[in-house]
Image 1: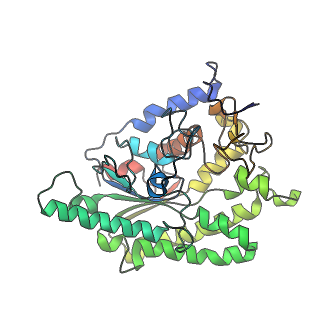
Image 2 (image 1 turned 180 degrees about the horizontal axis):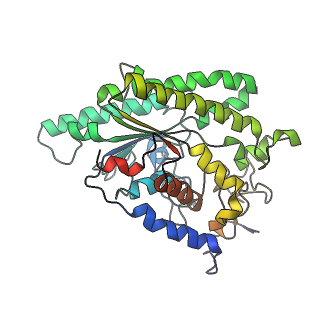
Image 3 (image 1 turned 180 degrees about the vertical axis):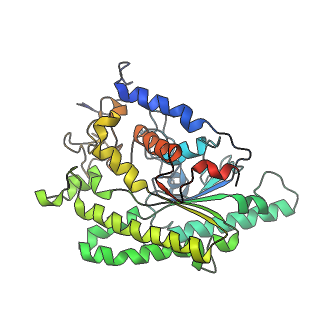
Length: 376
């Protein structure tokens, strides 16, 4: 059911079982027994952008973004919190500050370099992964300079070494490639995406994280891109294009190919070049696809339909009327939707994803939890 117009009506008080599931996750997500909070530096795209796009380009994501948790737009393309928010809350860290935020920034425990639309490949967007890492290096240099001059409240050398460097990048490289190239050529481009990630972590003498002290890396693989309502509404044509869950096989197969190469890179770096570092590879693809494939078991409905968009079933997505634009629709029972705007996920979905990361080690290689970095 769809409620049309720009009204931000309050959700009904009668919420299905998914609300209880969602609320039951909160104690698990925020329970932390850290002996020392690590500093977290994040690099990514809209999956982890907490306001970088608005700070960088002056374009704010307006309502209905932020309506569920923050009750106002927060710089996130979501109704509430992202996976990154939940992971950091589990360590007692809140209020993510974008690196480019000029008004009252707080970099005591984190700095977020992620900006929506970013890609691993440089040249296509203003804030590719290599640019984000260069921004981090400037941040690092300035922090150490200011500390040497007696200023307080900045990250010191030891904290940079103990910090966690989270990376979630690649989905835009793959998805955008399908607009210009056939499947075989998209697959052929994947090694170039992986090379950029390798340069950021290890190879580049100018900008790599390891060269400048980074020893704890948390790397997310990419998600099932063929399950995005955006892609489903604009790409699929024949029945053979779709898998058993209704997702586009070509995009999901490309995501799997990317993930296979990304895991191989993490394994190689861990065993050879960076043996004194902790590199954790996290299988986000499996976590997200499981929720889509088994949405009924989690209490979700319409896993392939955007909560905020235009057009109604089956996908509620129209490229000419996206979430927040005039005539957009918002659906009823927000907590029962997985997709927020056809590309990003709802807070309810993100809470499930984060709870799986935090409650089990089966999705990470090596099998350690995010809380490991509390005492690393």
